[in-house]
Length: 157
Image (tube, rainbow, N blue to C red):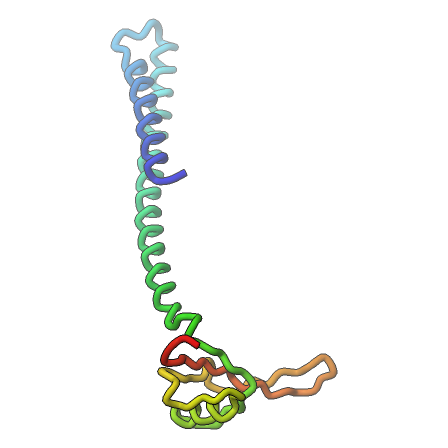
């Protein structure tokens, strides 16, 4: 249910409560027991009305928060799509060196690719994590996994 539907439902319920409260405000109660009943119903309706108002405020706050989150998610998604898929290649298995520069990384990637590629063909080249990872296989042996490398080419290949 969206915010507009909730607002319409709220308006409908408030109109119903208002009509019931008018009945309870009858200036000429039929008897003392009717007056006591009307008083109890009116008290209950006042409590319900205040609770409904609090819920309406919660709905409005939630709608505003959801709107802000949606905008934030859209901005994050746009920032996350830093490169197009057509011009990007992710290379794995190339050992990482400490304090390696992007120029050194580009040379290493170009040298390890079997195709004829020069560093001038890259617009960007970087590791996706900073260091090697060490994992243990099922036999307990440790393996060093170098970080993957993202290579962005000048034009789609």
